[in-house]
Image (tube, rainbow, N blue to C red):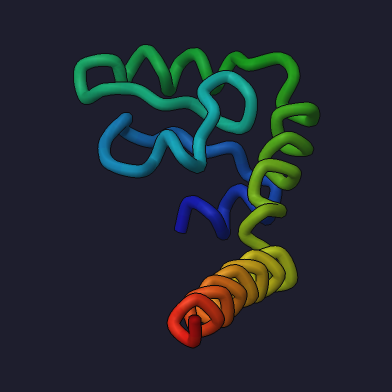
Length: 94
């Protein structure tokens, strides 16, 4: 749900646990906080002056997860694996 929110231009507030920091760049496209700082983070977010810029940053930050990007990366990985297998096959023949 983090990616969907960011893709729609909604900065997110998330607990700084697990892989969330991979998606949320605190202060740029949302905020990461711990349980004890949630109230302060919510108040800060509510008063944040540059919401439009943060919204644009949210959209930009998840473009790497778009289907075309993911497919391109996967194809590149498969090509590298295939090249390694071909190189390995050539070595085995000698």
